[in-house]
Image (cartoon, rainbow, N blue to C red; front, side):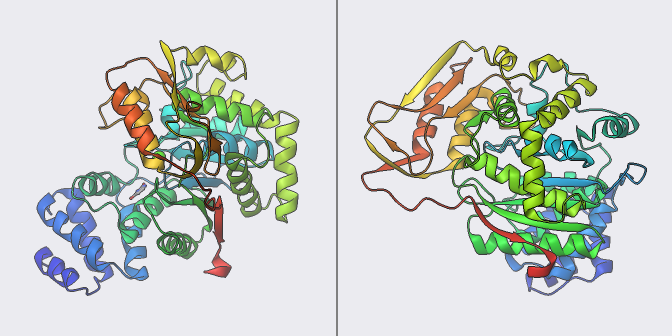
Length: 442
Ligand code: URA
Ligand code: CA
């Protein structure tokens, strides 16, 4: 088998066999296939695509490139969620403890933020002492005691994805549906959950910019999951503006606490997406028979404080100072040198946002990384004062920036302003949730 022949066939739009796909993944992980050949292959895949069968085979070969986590000794149906990445997307810190409070088992492995998107691990680490590097047995023990724990992926989980993703990142081959589907699903399947609710983002701040692309990605991931015996559903939700109002690490932890404390109204977009994720997680875990029953359980876990108690306990068991998981005390983690309001330059309606630019503005303040080696300042970021559809008067604040290092402040403000469109006439506000993709409706 010569890899160059495989590249040539893929470049002509032909399908690879399952043996060839395995040869490619194993060869690239072992070093037998060099970066330059794999770059040509990922570009050919990006331009010519892969069939659903090829994508499923690629996912399996990637999953089997490293360790897989066995959660079978934990009680009940293990349920996970995954977002394809967004801005102000604080859903894990809300919905994982809520589902645990409703009797669910959530043993979750998350990622770090890169570029304009935030990562749950960085948010967790904004609480002093909190660890996301916990040995597997201790992780499972925390889940047994509290129903929920969130840690980083172990080094040996899907090494093929680590290597292929790093290559895609620098060869403009990230935005390919089969490559994204296999990257996400190989990691989800390897981390051991029985049931997975995917949150596929669509819009200016997401990998998928159009609804048909997002639907294709969502359906493909649901099919791959179901093929391997997992229960999988996907929501398609909007990422044309930040989901929550907070963009930053400790800022997003505060917003999660506020939501779990009942301080955020039910029509708020973050609330709505969290509730919907929770509904489908409870249903897949056989903890509710209808959407109405699931919603009632989740709302009860907000009202009686049990969701917030599970979040607090999770931080305590993950070695953090859980006293900060409190609507007042969390503010102590948000002490910065300066609070800067960014005023609107004209009066009008907020008709569009670019979530990528808003995420990048927060990253420039130090809330995110441009490269994997960058240090994060957990206290900085921004809090939105407007949403799409808001009316704003000239001089009123569009956001409040939490600032320590002012080196890139001017650039951040410029980037933020570019991310907000203000017009004299209102435009239709994009919906928050477009669709729910299940095995039945693919
Ligand atoms: N998230 C992933 O884990 N992989 C991708 O390819 C894109 C988003
Ligand atoms: Ca992420």
